[in-house]
Length: 384
Image (cartoon, rainbow, N blue to C red; front, side):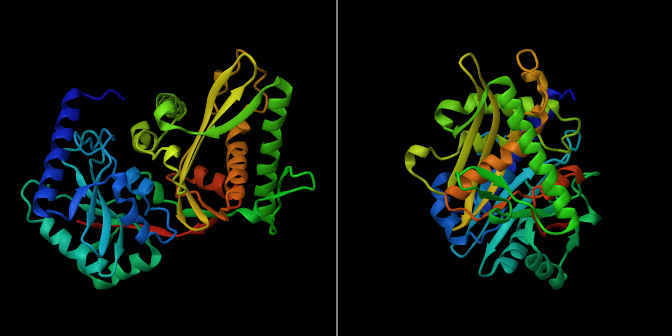
């Protein structure tokens, strides 16, 4: 879809005005989100997908063209010493005249009171449109607590974010994997894909195992390796950006997502040279003596001592990338193969659980179920 320059300028100016108004009205409480906030963020982590440094950047991001920020592309953070949440501002569509404030993954001792009072004060700020305000990444408990107070919070069906995905990537609930149920090792140390009990589980896991073997056969048939290495933002960000853009070009319907949603993850991921053990980021390449083709990017963050949330999970399935050089048979199984290889790496780093996040569409949710993932409910609410 062609985007007019007028829409970009208008959207950019609107978010800039909203961000300035928020920081002016809540001095020393609302501020730009940066890596310096990691120590504070870690104090509130509870193992959930939405609340982490990468999670807040992903969902508050100011690179999105429906809510572009000139100064604060990582989004804003509300922190009053006891309560914390992310803040973003987006239009639902490019054509929409005014955007909407997003409150992301609220946490803290008095978070309900704080969110309530915050919304009431925001409604009095002239620079902030009187549009619906969305609260996202709510656990089932937090969702029930807000619904019980009956003070203007409504179900997302009353004002859905997207006509086909009312809660964006929480339309289908999050999926959590216990790695010991998915993978093990034989007596030679080779990775083995396990089978689960139950008819649906057996059928799903069989498909994942077959896909893993199909891609292994593709590699063997073409005498090419699939090399997975740590992703270094200072050296590989352009390569990662190109990979993400190419991925989105192959999608028939991205349901509201765009490449820009992930730029924070590849631009502002803390460097491995800092020795930070909270982040896991890998790039995969097809490689032989003649080629090095970027094909995979996975980025995640530890959300508690034994759980990683995966925020970027890109594996290029378009066989046009390789069909001019290799026999593409089995290449489209790269997604399952990539996940299982990453699970192996995470398990060897002491990780027991992996949160794959939620999904906009049923096909993606089914894919996660085929890997053996269990449901973890999360919700949106809206204040109209």
